[in-house]
Amino acid sequence: MPQKIKIFDTTLRDGEQSPGASLNIQEKLIIAKQLVKLNVDIIEAGFPIASPGDFAAVKLIAQKIKGPIICGLARCIPADIDRVWEAIKYAKKNRIHVFIATSQIHLEKKLRRSKEQVIQIAVDGVKRAKKYTADVEFSPEDASRTDLNYMCDVVRAAILAGATTINIPDTVGYAEPQEFASRITYLKEKVPEIDKKGITISVHCHNDLGMAVANSLAAINMGATQIECTVNGIGERAGNASLEECVMNLKVRSDYYKKACTEINTSEIFRTSKMVSDLMGMVVQRNKAIVGRNAFAHEAGIHQHGVISARETYEIMHAEDVGWEGDGLVIGKHSGKHAVESVLQEMGYELTKDQIASITAKIKELADKQKEVERADIIAIANDVTQALTKQEQKIILKELAVMTGTNITPTATVKIEIDGKEIVGASIGVGTVDAAAKAIKSLIDPSLKLTSYSLKAITGGTDALADVAIVVENKKGEKFKASALNEDIVKASVEALIKGANYAMMHKTPKKIRPQDIGE
Image: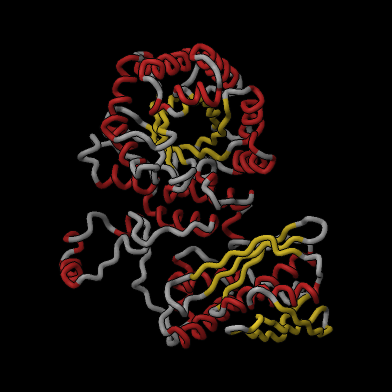
């Protein structure tokens, strides 16, 4: 029989530790709901002791998510473990994951503890977690740089204390596949309690040398039955083992991996990848395996001829197996509402007739300028329309915008806005046209309003790409409000986002970042 490999998803914990990545509580819940559709076995929802926000997110996920085991991370410290339990106790299936570093460099430089002291701390941590739940996972941090025999001693002690899953992490991405596989083999040979007690061996590999997936899969062939991974391979430094790459290797090459298999719903892989990328603001590289834009694209003539004859000539898996959506679909100015609606329905959007009409009009307008509209453009426009303010919410309306810049010219912006029916005009200079426009708007609305975050990304390539601007504004009370806007012109997109953010600040409400139906209850 095939050996089931559990997928332990740590996108919401280790993945969110990626430099530049951040999620609010509702966004974490949205991703967790998508992970349920993906059918992961365990969701490591966060590190509850890290912050009140992290605790609240883990608690909400434990309350709302059904199906996977909900796990929280803790150091082998009583306060950490207690805090995890307070967050995850609402889940029908829960797990406490405790860890302590075991490599010599960590013992000497970070912990400043003896080997015996660390073993005792590990045992105490596992026992404390065991008082709360039967499902306890233990990790000897930096295991790949830990003395083999000492690693075995720590693991044996953790098992005898009650751990049911032992995770062997390559915390700094130091290991090589054959070396890491040998470590798993040695562990199983020297710690017979693993087989006697039916302990799950897990692996958590980082990608500092580009070996995270290879090391994880090498461990599977040596008897590990759980992989800890993240969507798109995000995580600390160079990231973690990529969920989609691990899963599809096991599926496509089950012959090599001793018939090992997962229960992942692979048709949800691309959708999950896109959601995580969008919400975290971390773009997936075009040539990324499985989920990159080029993953199933063919340009060379000989490849195209082969694929037309039989896709198997150059494709080792079916694009539909991962729910992949490429750039073959062309929507232009001659496309009608039905075609647009069909595309968006495939992506799970539920739209009103007015929203479809508005999206179609914007697509036609864009097509007149850049001739071809790609799927990513359509999705961006749909998000922009569904997040649009209602007439009642538009206390501030942009009426006119004029900017001037050039060589040896100070960037200047003049704006006319309407506030509660009254038109006012303002002007300002800045280090650039966007800065000048922002200052002009703030001078009219509220000089104390701060622009605390500004990000810009192009939806698709080229100089005619749609500009997607996301901002955070802060009022004098310290309250923060997110807003975003889409336009072919960077300055216009920036000003529209700022106006939208100012409207939210006036209403003291946070805007929706994604479609309401994704949030659910």
